[in-house]
Structures are given as C-alpha cells and as structure tokens.
Length: 595
Image 1 (cartoon, rainbow, N blue to C red):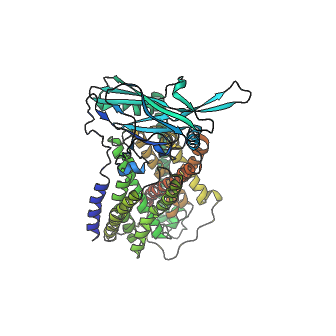
Image 2 (cartoon, rainbow, N blue to C red):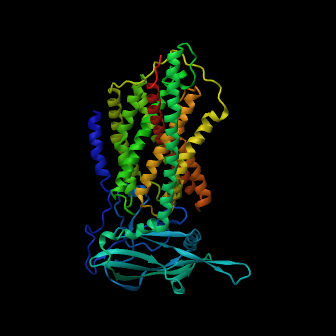
Image 3 (cartoon, rainbow, N blue to C red):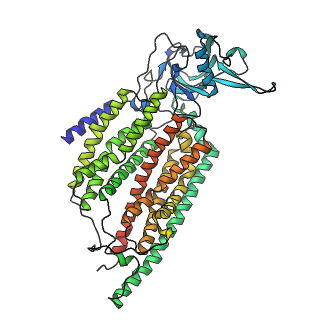
C-alpha cells in the first residue's frame, strides 16, 4: 500500500512541479517587428526589506482594463512572485516617445500611499520576455537652502524603457526614470488630492550579443575580478585551516596513538594486573549505547537526509539549473528533492535504531519525520500569518498550501515509511570491537574547559572560520538584491566545511576518551552541530550591523527562516561529526586487545 501511495505521490509531484523551468510567452523567444510582447508587473516593496513585498497594484497605479494574471509554478509562488499583465505596451522593435498610460485623480489617501512608498524607498519589479527589470517608485529631495532642512517626496510619473535586441530575439531590457526632467515628476509631499498622468517611452537598440548569453549581465556583478579575489582568499583561508587541522590530526594518529598502542601492548606483556589508564581504561564503556537513543538516531536520519539534499542541490547548481533569475527553480528543487530523499531519513534512522536494539521503531520513525518538518511547519504557520496580516505576497495562497500538504502526505510520508521498513529489515548489527560491561564506570572529575559548552565553542569556531567570508555573499544574495552564481566556489567551501567539522570532532573526541570520559556519543554530535549556533550568531551580526532591514515582518522572516536553516545545519553537521567519530573510535579500539 505504501509503495502504491509513493508511486502515485511521485506522479503527482511531477505534475505539480512541472514548472521548474520558467516558460516564456513565446516558446522560442522569437518575434517579428510589431509583435506584442507582454510586460508583467510583479511586486513592489521597501528596497531594504526583501521579504516585505506587495502586489504591484496595491499602490494606486493605473491597472489595465482587464487584469490578466500569469500562471506560475510552485517555486515562483513560494518566491512571492505574483505576475499581472501591465498597462504598458512594449511591442517588439517599436519605439515610443511619450505614450500615456492613464490619467486619474489621486485622493488624499492615494497620495499618502505613494508618499509612504517614496519614504520607504519602494522599488518595483517587472518581467519582460522572462527578463527581470527593476526601478524605483520615486525619490526624496532635500532643500538645503532653507534654514531648517525640508524634504520633498517626488513620484516618477514617466518611466523610460530601453530594450536591446539581436535580429528576432530580445537580449536585454532596463527601465529608468529620466533625471533632471521636472515634468516627469509629481510632488506628493502635501496631503492633498492631485491630478496624475502616467506616461512612458520605449527605445530599441540592436546588438550582436547572442541570445544564449543574454543572462550573462546578471552574473557579471558576482564574478568581478575583485570579488573573485575575495572568494579565492576565502578558499585559501579555509584550505590553510584544513591543512593545519589535518596536520594536527595526523600528529595525534601517528605519534600519540602510536605511543598509546606501544604502551598498551607493553602493559599487556609485562603485567596483566597493572591498572589501565587513558582511553583503553574505558574500553568496556565506550560502546555503551547512548541515552535517548530514539532521539539520537532521529537526528542522524534527518541529518543524513539534509546532507543528501545539499549534495543534490549542489549537483543541480553546477550543471547550470539555477541560472540567474530562473524564478522559483531553487524553491521547487528544494521541495522536490526533500520529498524524494525522505526515504534516506527513514532508512538511516530505523536501521541504526535496530542496531542499538531499539524496539519501538514506529515511534522512532514518527519522530524522524517530525524532527525537522515540525519546527519548520510551526515557523511557516507563524510567518504566513504575519504575511497575511501585512497583505504581503509572501503569504501563500490556499491552493499552494494544499499542494505542499499533498506532497508531504503522498510523497514524503510514504517514502519515509518505505525507508523505515527497509531499515528495520536490514538485519545489520552494531559492530563494536570491545564487549560492553554490565555497569558503567564512573567518570572522573574534569576541569571546566572539558565541559560540553566550552568544547562546543571550540568545535564550532574552526568550521565557522572556514566559511564566514563566503557567508557574507550568501546573505547578501538571499536577504538582499545581490546575485550569487559562483556555485563551484561555494561547493568547495561546503566540502571544506564538512572536512573541518569531521577533523575537529575526531580530535575533541580523542581528548575526551583520553580523559576517561566514555559518554562521547551525544558529545560528538553536539561538537559537529555547534557550527549552527555560530551561523545564527552571524545572523544577529548581519541583521544589526551589515543590513538596513527593519520592521516586524522582515525581522520575523529573517530570524524565523534563518533559525530553521541553522537548525538544519546543526542536524547535518552533527551527523557528520558523529559518523567521523564513530569511524575513529572503532579504528583505535580494533587496534588493541580488549579483555
């Protein structure tokens, strides 16, 4: 039954998410002179608050006679896109000097609405032949001649489109307000009704840039030479960190462990009754199963799934799926791949749970399914409510919520159950080189810096130091208007993050065992996942120091979704840390004679 549901859900998923690639209004993007090419208006909002966006016609612009909404894919809706055909007519290769869009009388409330938009530095986004273009609603002028500085709020009533074409294809388009033309501005400073006439002009120019490279201009800003130097400096810094850690770990493995092996072998030959010390002393406790093992293996299951999700996303980015402004492609890929990889979480959790001699695998499977999705769902419910109150485009329509629920119930859940059943029936046994004693040994008193919190701070700092430079560009892209397209460098940084996390966790686990502390299972997971706390700390720094975001809605969206992302990093890197430590611990205890 679960297999049939999974197959049916997979087919539904393909149908619902078939819009991963944005389709143009003309299938081949070819036009003849005079052909109508629709211009879609998307959204408006404060420039410094990227999550706080509203429908274009929430401002009192002139709507067309009939509002025609463009059908959007799942990822576009999740991205907050709400495309409506504009009243501007931009026919292919047809120049226009000053066409009138409409004439209307603005009421006091409409003037106040425009004035508020100018004060908050509102921008608008439009889409023309799948090419994005942006402009500002108005500008603020400061009267420096007056004794007391006065501000005038001016609305752009005329905008100029400049389009570039190559034969029968559109290569580039931009929109701007012509500066220095007082007739193209209207003063909305005073709280009174005014007459408004909206006009526009269009200028077409020819170029020899091929159609295949028309998206190149959007990625140039992220690949400028000085930016690339910073990216490569980040990688060099990370590589140095990796080399230092590798040398440090190699020293431990080659010298300290070698001395330990020689010492323990000598002790066995000389005096069998001699008291053991160090990590060999706890060989009867080191493989004792951890407390709360159901939660422990649920974290491993979710972390393994998120690691697989990250790797698949990187593969898609490296093959060019996420080219600049392929609207919604990333969100669609995240939903689809997360749903399809849920079987990995189910299999990993239940198979390891069975190895730890767990009995209630059904409860463990439910915990695995809710461990990451639960907090994410609660966060989404709160933030979607906030967006509804603000009437923002970030509020998902009811139909989209139904689609997500169907994907979760018909794809994610059945695959999770199938993976859990496969894991339960795997019959794998936990490989422990040493026999576990009946009663645990007492852990000797340890200094304060050996505690969990200080060790987590040390474990999280080094991996974070390897990625913090790249974090700035990622944040500027996700929570700003910058473009990030250097996925190869990001992938290298991600691999370095995984390696550093594994190395530092193994090193701290060894020191813990050498201090005769055998409760390393949870500690190794916390060591690896501690980088998530550092990333959240960087969120605080970025919001209050590096950005100009403000307002309850933007603050809620930023910290709400970043908390979920940092939680995901905690699960994923915690899994990496534990797996690396488990391999290390098994290796060293296989190398000695355990009684």
